[in-house]
Length: 177
Length: 170
Image 1 (cartoon, rainbow over the protein chains, first blue to last red):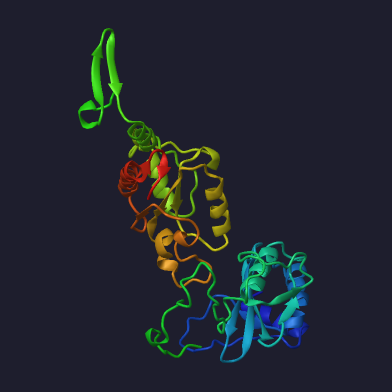
Image 2 (cartoon, chains in turn orange, yellow):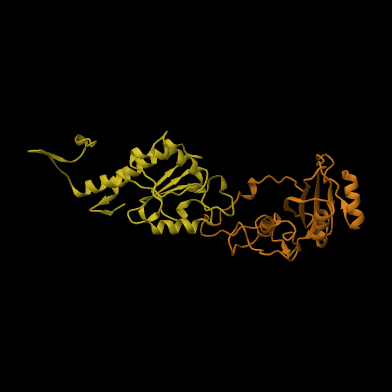
């Protein structure tokens, strides 16, 4: 089954799934297809990938904060380790407002457990059905989620007063998406 | 004996059967403290690798009387070798509190001095001196083992100057 067939099969099974175009045509195309599904169906799609298509390994999961488009994007990378090997990126959009959340994959892939905690810690995205959704890197009671692009650091007793980060004039005002 | 008597404020008397050395209690206590700075076995980040090299055969910290101790209750010196994260700071404070007086702190490398390359981070303390008092700062990223040796020599000089009648004056 080649990449095009793979995307077709997922799209056939989950009607709302679609292949993701590159944000910029100049970008190098990754060697694996990227499929976008609605956030609430992620666990369902992952179960299908694991049990029926043989994607037995979750390489990593992470999140991206697209501040200008006002959305988070979850990114999952799956690998089929049996021959013929295959790879797939699964993506899902989430709103930035309120408490964004989506189903947890921790019950399906052990690898998802700590990585979902990391995403929860740094982005504040909640994973429903996660067995132990607590901060993993920062300490309990930390204010905010520092990998959000609109995060503002509140200086504490270990900082030098209010002086944190570069002054605004020193930051180049380049466009970044 | 290995002690260079000409350089010490001592009086040497020849007595039948050997020699009798007289000196001040202050000098003797300082000399003993200087010659056995026992640091806590405690590494935080990549500076700890240089610290291990300083202990090992090629650089040989033992010749200064620097012997790592496994518990803060036996240690005189705390070498902060690496990045002090805000999550680690309470643990460092606690280790420092468990050390008996007189105790000394060497801040090793840019991170421990001021936050270093992580100055703009939300999770790194801007220097270990925000947490505990520091006696000697070593610049470098990371400092070479020789720099750590030099810090111990500086600390020895500081011990010599810092105590009067057994208590710390500066």
